[in-house]
Image (tube, rainbow, N blue to C red; front, side, top):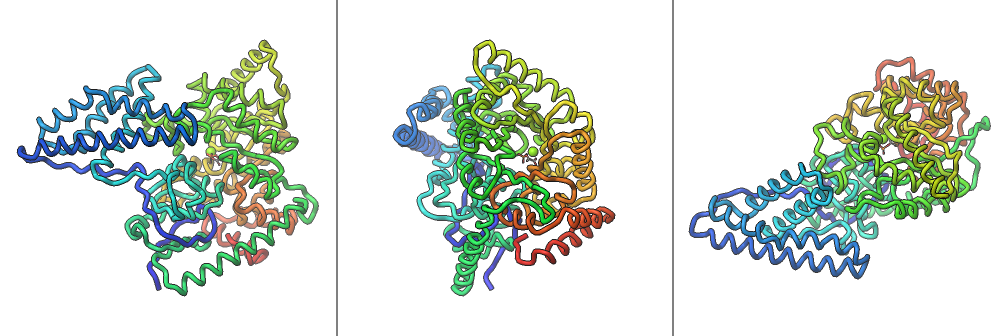
Length: 580
Ligand code: PEP
Ligand code: MG
């Protein structure tokens, strides 16, 4: 038997290929003292890395200018400015000579000093330089250590990426043609990196803890994201067995895809709506091909991953692409949800002690009102091109609803004055993903047109369990009775107050929870494409009554383990051949 390592399935599937260990941002800074007689040599080493880094940046600039645009290539001008700054250069040399420390150590300290002093400056342009300095210093340290920094966008052969962790933006830039799968030591099922993997249909395992220490660059691996393990240097027989399995899964998928033609209702004729969650516009056609009846969650964050914030026109064009493609089906655009694990170039320097409890989502937008106004203008403008709904994330207080709606009204007035048309009836809704919003949902219902339940965060905040921590992943369980009670309360409030209700957390996209959610009163489910076919199959084979009976049976139990065991028993009894 070959060695293997276990992990949590972030995106299902099987992949077989060569491992590529991706270090990403995790560079190690060696720290040692230099004997007096070798100081000149150390300064020479620094000079060489400086020259090499300049060469690298110029090469990237030329490559980007030819493949993208001169504007994008200009980003690297500021990198060169840092490298050509004589004060910076001299300071590093002087410190190496004076303190007898190695170049990486000194370079890192001086960059950190610079970053710290820039963080307190009000000027936005200067603050943006923080990212440049941080990038440059990483690149130089890499050059000092002679290790190449390959971005996941630059891969040139098919690999399985193994990393300690990946950021959502690492995942977004991955060259999908070459990334067969990825495996990370850290992270949980609802981390945004896992969500991106499902969106891109790349098999992925997260939270493996030791894959980077057990797997070497170039090792052959099988990622079995059906049973949750990575097999390292498999035997020939294992490879043959898994290749066959891969083929079987493809056939099964093809067979299941025929279901898109059929209506989505239960045996007792209750219509159940299936929508898609999209993270990047490229997914819109995959999701439609899977039979989605619209977009229940359009995470607008992807537009903000770039170092340059998107202006109104850019946002308008991106939203329009999706809205027109789906017209007349609805597209729910969620305003920016940065913070938590979604840290982008423009927020990289806002360090917070507890990012998930910090300036995230609507809090960030209300603090940075100019960004919210630009986004609302773009969304309102696009509302006259199709069926658009607007959604605010992470609403915690009723005041946030008032404030966000007040800004929305103001933006509408502005557009009226400019004679720009928009849909004046555009529904406005909120995510219910914080316990206070669920508890006060009867009050919030008076002020919004719809609720969309974000179980990824709701579970995290209700159980006080970090959704991306692999250490306490065992506690992150949507079947905790408190979660079920909360989901039930939200659906009752929505029905009583005639507020449209959907659910867009990852729970909605997992077949094992479908009967439970139907039984809890949910009729609008929004999910990634990964399990859409299976979920529709379940919907068409059950009655609401049996789903409600299941809920009754589960909600008298106190213990999460018992609830889970009973639920899986019932679901597997009815659908024995599914992947759960
Ligand atoms: C959620 O929290 O369930 C949700 C859908 O939002 P996100 O995963 O983007 O935080
Ligand atoms: Mg959320």
